[in-house]
Amino acid sequence: MTNRMPDVTFNLMADIGLPIRNIFMNPRKMLAEITVLPGEKVLDFGCGPGAFTFLLADIVGEKGIVYALDVHPLALRRIEQGQHGHRYANVSTILSDGATSLPDGEVDRIVLFDVFHLLEKPQAVLSELHRVLRPQGSLYFSDHHMQEGDILSRVSLSGLFELVQRGESTYHFRKV
Image 1: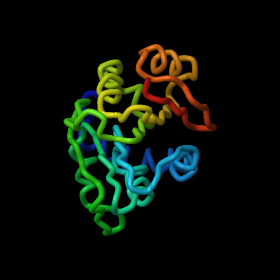
Image 2: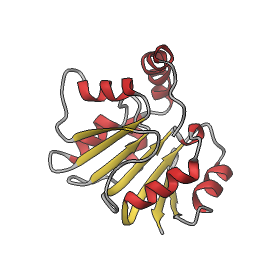
Image 3: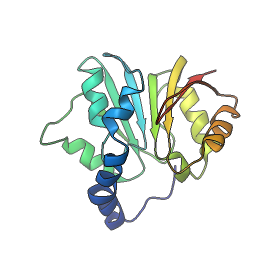
Image 4: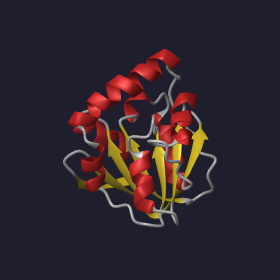
């Protein structure tokens, strides 16, 4: 995925930077733009400390699962500790810089929010996401560090995904 940032930098980002970002890019509002159903399997790629992970876990419920993947062990430690003391049995963490170790076609939806600009090998990551996504599965993308033209060209021109819909904050791509 990307080089792991130092622990102190991660903690500053998680405790100060992301809460400020979440004021302007509200996770609930962003998730309202996408379709995730109870019982589904969702990959939260680049989950960080869990701004979307826990909300997704609530949506998929106890019959679903959220795979929370991040390159930083502190991110996964925060996920594993739960939110507000509540542990989520339907969340499984994956420490990785890109490879998921999931079976082919394992997930229904992928959330790739605010991480694509950091990827060292973005096309390799898109290939991995394509592999683990079920046929006609959905990739939801958002990255406020990138311009729309760059997003569309880098994701669609891979030949792996096609744009379905543009929301206010998110892009919905379907596996080709």
